[in-house]
Image (cartoon, rainbow, N blue to C red; front, side, top):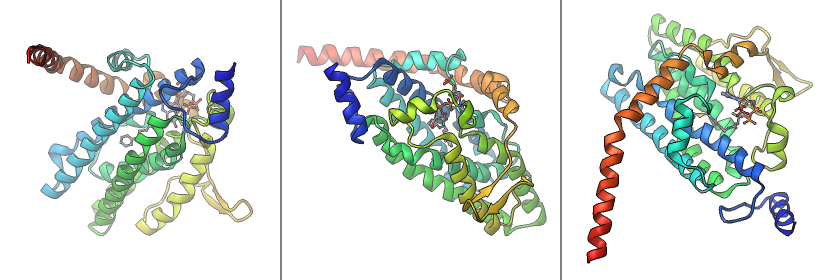
Length: 310
Ligand code: BYC
């Protein structure tokens, strides 16, 4: 009882819960679920953009894209490491991902059809990620909060590179401008879906807010993203494909339409345009890496023997 009271006091005071502290089972499970999904998203998120590395239009764009995709691998690593501090096993999480028992962000189940998608993912997808993730720097679990600080700095850089790429394309030919607009039309609604279902249908929000794992609700963050993005779209010269999008002076926010929530649940349930391809690719990469893991283990075992003898 004392332990539970101490946990509640720590959370209520806005202090951090650390790996060796007592925590309720539900808190531990919720964190493993959310952080693992987040880690999986970073790793699966390498695929849609990775698709364009070999076809980047210049050496400069190739180097930028390579660095960005590599950053996402780093984010996945910090986050898997954070789950390990909760007692999760990384191999087990990967197994759950490739067997469809754990989720990753719906956004990465949409294909990248043109090079403009690289810019739009940077602008909208990383923009949405920043809105969602900056508050997570104040999440109640210490290792997750600390991982988020570096991740957010890098995501912010990613967003700027996307916007800069789009600005360059918008200053180019009519065909390039049309390519950007077509990409925005495809990615706008899926970007809004990244924040999760409406609050009234969000099974986990209330509990996660009480534990201060989530610091804002899904709808609050979606609104923040729309308000942040509208002036950026104007400056860029693209139209966001929502006829209901309008500034509401009384609310001091933009009104906007609802994404197709049936499509969202289909994608979350494994039936989006690229779900099977993404998971299959991840499964193959994991299997192909088997010899590397075996070699690393053999090396570690030999070294342990050598150090023992010395
Ligand atoms: N996609 O009760 P709810 C990135 C699931 S990485 C798929 O509201 P919660 C980036 C949800 O898991 C982006 N599933 O859930 C990477 C739950 O199912 P379970 C990832 C979704 O957890 C590389 C059910 O629907 N970011 O940005 O309270 C390159 C009901 O939802 C989605 C993070 O993971 C979705 N969009 O709230 C570029 C951030 N939405 O688990 C960019 C951390 C909901 O009960 N995560 N579901 O079976 C979060 O902030 C929260 O987990 C969410 C969902 C807001 C995503």
